[in-house]
Length: 186
Image 1 (tube, rainbow, N blue to C red):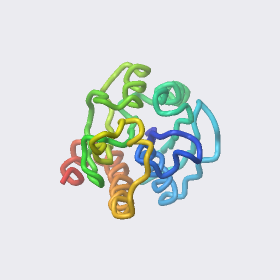
Image 2: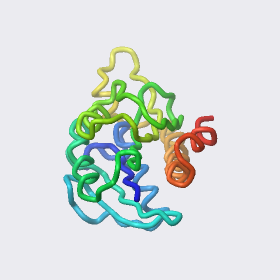
Image 3: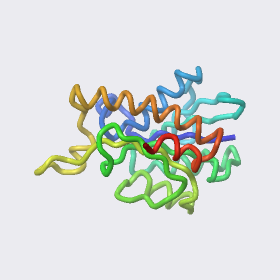
């Protein structure tokens, strides 16, 4: 069994923002595999299904980004899923808009949602799929930038990245993060 979590902030004011590409990817993945996220449990919006023979729990934490670990800690505990079977997809300001990068493990970097998860589950040993949202322009505060929406040209690149990230999530489950890295970290 795998838990796949997309990070973002709940609420209409955050929809389609840079910080919500994790939520957007989960929505895309759920539609592709006909999984309905229709239950509010463990401080998140949750859906269950089967993807390529693997039981999957999809989660969009509803705790706001900086407390994402609260939801995922509860989900992992309830379903008795080891952290190695958690895959997290989220935005990354250190990648150019539309880039997708898979990592088998690692630190939180500057991402507060990931910092919360690492603090709550107590390990860095789980795969993640990062989607580049670009760096803030000069004079912008980081918080304002990640909560902003993409330009039209950027949106096209992000939509493509979300589709690639969705495919990468399935590859991580099927083949492992290392094998998926060689295919998707181009």
